Length: 132
Image (cartoon, rainbow, N blue to C red; front, side, top):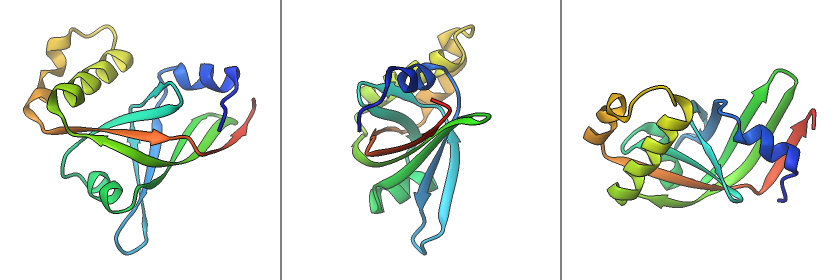
């Protein structure tokens, strides 16, 4: 899927995203998350062991929704890579923390260092957009 420049600009603003994953019984589980557009993928970061973490390892198909009123993007994709290398995953979560809280010193995000983190690399396969 090719994103337009306007869609990229929208995604580069630090808004929240809703990640939808599938539970073992087929129900949908949603989580509000930080994200970053990285080239033609979306990266997110989670603590290992959380429900979404378990879900994407079992079923990598996901949906991500970004909105600003009537401007929104609903993205279908797949977790194409999970990065559990702690040097990379910790750098990613700290980068996301700086993106969403640029006024805070890095020390305020030190609690992430106590957690086992994992970066999710999500493909952008299909986009339904409104207002672009």
